[in-house]
Amino acid sequence: MCLVISLVFAALAYLFFEDNNMQGFYINGGIALFFIGLLIRSILTAKKK
Image (cartoon, rainbow, N blue to C red; front, side, top):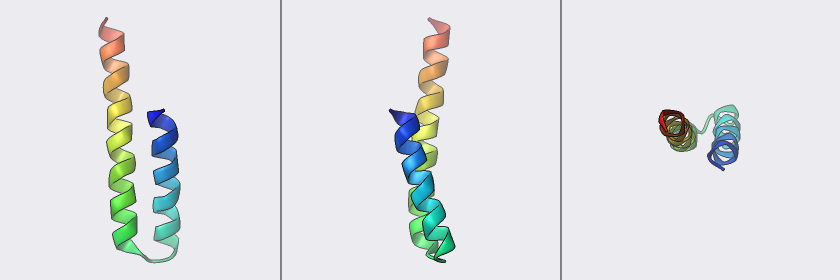
């Protein structure tokens, strides 16, 4: 689920970047990075178990 959400926000960030809307780019890019971080943390905790 985190992968899908992060891809959606990354696509939105890219669209905002193309429109030169840097505020929207930074917000959506940050949210995408947050969900990618959650995905990596989940993978690492599952790998340790």
